[in-house]
Image 1 (tube, each protein chain N blue to C red):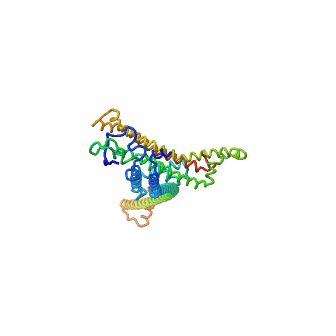
Image 2 (cartoon, rainbow over the protein chains, first blue to last red; image 1 turned 30 degrees about the vertical axis):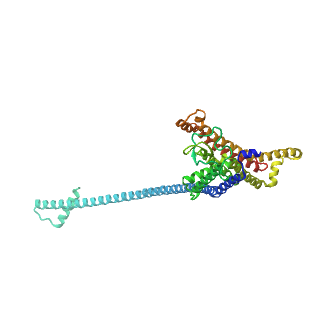
Image 3 (tube, each protein chain N blue to C red; image 1 turned 45 degrees about the horizontal axis):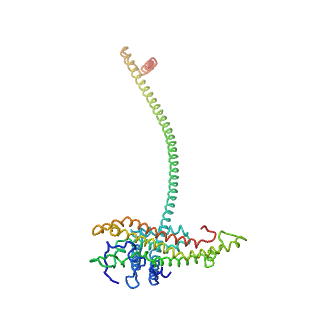
Length: 166
Length: 288
């Protein structure tokens, strides 16, 4: 056994030196490499998890916001449609009212025009009768050579007016 | 010891064994070339990790990213074997073992390791054969592989006792397994006790098997590279430029193989350690 150990060059000082080297690597790596790196990996893992959690929250909030916006849009659309319908009804009513007013006004204008025309016509007829009566009186006075008094003129006028129908 | 300091010996590699033989030769007092290389590897590993982890940030730089990737990957593997509960205790040792072994193994593949050293002079800055190389892979020395195994066994013992307690560990080794109850349990107790003794023997031999496996593979790799390097001279009787050329070309494919073997042996050593921890920390009723 000793021969084998000697042949392989195993000796306590060398063995202990190698053990010390391994222990140095073990302790230094544990303290300055594995610990900090594992802590960093854990921190990164947590950060990623938080990020994912935040993304989920944001997505949920976004969905909620979109839902709210959609609700608001729907409500606004409903309001708009209602307002348009009301405006249309109101416009329809106003139009009907205005149309009726316009028709009435037109009728009134037409009536007035008719009345005015009738009055003008009557006035013109009266003037015409008067002129005609005057012409008849003149003609009668010239034909007869007699000055017609007021009663004659009046009678002739009435007879003329009675016989002339215009 | 005749010293012809330090000299290249490209055409003078031993056809039988890696330079210096299986026992790591001393270069300064009791300090062997293997201890020297182990120190260099330690400094290199510690400096690199210190540089990478000195100013750690959430958005990592290249070095920090590499170290984080390594540690995260290793932690995942360790956690997968020993479980979530034991992983924080076992990980530092297992990761240290893996990183140290793989670095030491690959360091041994650097040009000059095993081929620069002292030997019989054959000309200016040249020796016929290197007897005492300046550099030798740390894991090609039984002292180092035994040290790794010894440190592991101490930490393994501490983790096992911490997990199960002294009595729990004894019951775990010698007690009946499989949830046996009643008379059958008492009938089978002697058998389980005997199995426990075998288990103790296997535990005692674990450091030996771990260290010799690693040593054997790395030393064989070194020897293979030396043999391939000297193939032109020793088998084809090449000389001059051809000896130089063959000593470079022949080992190249084996360098790639040794890169793989270096990583594989680090993985095997670490995986076995993880499995040993898993076996000794599994509570009764848990799946083995």
